[in-house]
Amino acid sequence: MKSVAFHNLGCKVNGYEMDYMQQSMKEKGYCIVPFDGKADIYIINTCTVTNIADRKSRQMIHQAKKRNPGCIVVAVGCYVQAGGEEALKDQSIDLAIGNNRKKDLALLLEEYLAAREGERQGEGTLEEKTLGGKSVIDIAGERACEPMGITCTAEHTRAYIKVQDGCNQFCTYCIIPYARGRVRSRGLDEVAGEVKALAGNGYREVVLTGIHLSSYGMEGGGGFSGSSLLSLVQAVGRTPGIGRIRLGSLEPRIITPQFVKGLRDLPGLCPHFHLSLQSGSDQVLKRMNRKYSGEEYYEKVCMLREAFGNPAITTDVIVGFPGETQEEFEETERFLARVGFYEMHVFKYSKRKGTPAAVMEGQVPEPVKAQRSSRLLELGRGMSRRYREMYLHKEVEALFEEEKIIAGAVYQVGHTREYIRAAFPGKERLSGRILTGELVDFLEPELLLFRQ
Image 1 (tube, helix red, strand yellow):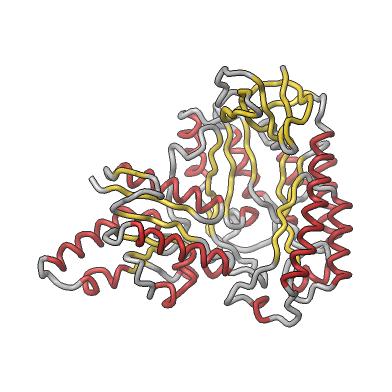
Image 2 (image 1 turned 90 degrees about the vertical axis):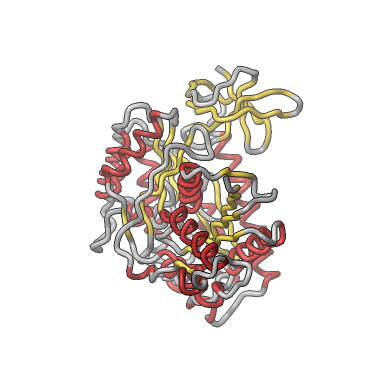
């Protein structure tokens, strides 16, 4: 029995795909071991969203080979998909597997092992047998989402489910359309069947995610009506045993009166919406090739708040995008304060080779990016606390997930429907249980005390 160690980099879609690869390797009889120990095979699920992500992917590949020079290192996913020959020349990589071939990991690995053994027995060269250990297809030509299905995940109560792959948006800072290809969606019945299996294994909450979730069912083009995604959410909502449904990052243009009404009528839909923004300046949005204005974005937020009362609205913001002036940054800062987000993920713009933004004029110096990032992070902390304060002494529903020791005391910790972290004192294990109670005080800046 060979030992296999996994390491994942990147997004929730990558996380889902790694869960599937681990599941498939277990089914083939491999022994899964920790990545920081010695293994026969190391599998690194790579990321390429920024140059920093590329560097981290290379570091993990080289660490694995250093840990056991006689091991087999398998580099999987976006870094080898987008990196071309430069990435594939890395001598630390024994087998490279691009996107839309992750489902075939066990088969490709066994073919590689057989070819290597054949080479040792004088039955030909590895190059002849396996194309040099490369299995990277032309992702732009793919028109079907690779079939996957999991029955368990690394988390015990919440399951992330990939329902869509690829992106057709081509934002000027983003390499992902080149690494993931065009929009491809899984079948509604296929997803519903997977959710049913997960519910049967005790999962109470599912999160529907994708590379560009709002494009689910839009392979043929058209506007962001949301009808295909809404149909999927409604089908998932009919699954017995699933108490909650969350949605991954949404395109603002999908928020229409019909889409919002359909979501509001689903009892299990959590009022927690991640609407990607990136900038509050219309001029910066145009340079990013984002296809909405700040005012249009604000209208979508108001639509959600009218329907759901006080939903959690979260977002992503990039500071220091090429050409961003101080005035444009301050316009973004004012816009963020006007919206009043629950949480913001603030990123300093990082050049990504191969994207239009990497060669734009007006690259912002790193110290300026750092200063702007600090201002927005401070703004975000204040907005986040104010949002949590609005739920103090109100009845909430919390799904408990794990036990934590906080200041020497035992707590059961979980999340409300709005994704506010809540802690219930006591040693009774509550994992997988949904309780109704009241948030009464702050235990930590991002953790509230829950009482029944």
